[in-house]
Image (tube, rainbow, N blue to C red; front, top):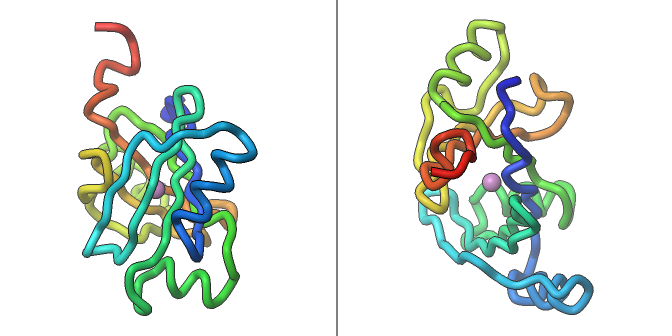
Length: 143
Ligand code: CO
C-alpha cells in the first residue's frame, strides 16, 4: 500500500480567522501551524486532528486557484492530502499508469513538505495532493 495516512483534508474558506474560530468553538481545535504561500496565493492554518490535519485555506488574491474554487463552488472541501513515503516515485508510477496530474514534478508545499497534485479527472473527482513529510521520514516509525 502506497498511502501511509490521510495527511490532511483541505477546505477552501472565505475568512480564515472565522473558520479557525468555528473549529475552536465546535471541536476545541487549536492551530498548530500557519503559513502563507505567494506562489499559491493562499494563507493557511493547520489544525491537528490526531496524526492528521484540517487545512483551512483562504485566498490572498483573486486569481489564486482557491479564489477561483470559491467563485465556482463556494466554501467547502477543496482537496485531500495523502501521505506517501516518496512523492517523486509515486508521481512517476502514477503517470506511467496514465493518471493525469496537475504537477508533473514534486514541489515545495507547506511545513517543508514535498507535494504534487493529481487532476480530479484522474482521481475519482477529488483533487488529490501527494504529501511527503520529511518530519515523518522512516514511514512514521519511531526513530
Ligand atoms: Co494541502
